[in-house]
Length: 358
Image (cartoon, rainbow, N blue to C red):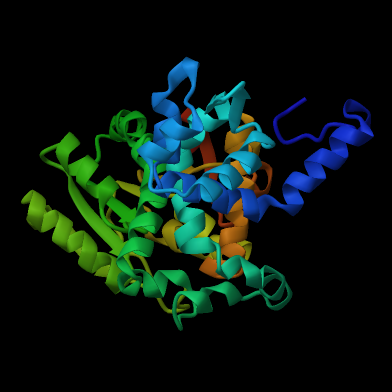
């Protein structure tokens, strides 16, 4: 059975099913309780208690919480496998430790809280209308990408930490694969803040980059390149890939798209890939790095990706998602490209597709 296959109803009792249903019903309550514990130092205080645990008096002394506040937070987390109690002492379960100190969990919590939480109230409207109705909670833009440069500082920080957390851990594994091509020029489509472009420039002192993205993102990238002293090796190309008249420059040995195509619906993906096809020389290779739900080794990865799709629905653009490979790869073929290599399990669950013109 794969990660994404469902268990049958016979695997759990009716009582267990009811308990799981209540955790979903009160999910927002538990989420906010855990965030409140993080912000008020309660997770840190419980963690310092280690296996011996801490008393209420010790926890009150370590935080600014009132006795009432402490007890209601302990009650909800005691019944949710986040905190344990033995006599008068409290400590963190394994789940609690993940909430307190796991970096992936922290990034996901902040992203949901700062970027998604209010907007997800508009999920039903977003699905019905095919537009990101929840984005109005952040600003007046048609897509979140138009507004990235204008988001409040805390929201922007959480968005970029979420976006970079996963790709940053896959780039070191992807670099030697891409540089097998011995590229003189790499075109980074959807270059964002330039993490991949900078990684390539640092990996090979001779390579040149073409960075393609919306003007607002390229301004951030240009600042990062200037700070690194590498702006002279990068050609910036402001481009709206959804503009029917837009094209990609020709001449690159490698075209790179990382966590980019999941920002678009299926027809848009095919259109963008056809533009790449047109820009490719006979020797060029297109590398696509994505996280596919059905290529994940662990349940946490598959669940996180499926949940992220609803961010795209309500907040980003209303029509994109984290794809399954079985749905994505036919889009590559529709664009007239052929996949010559598939590499899974890069970094935190990425897959890398090498594509060429037939």
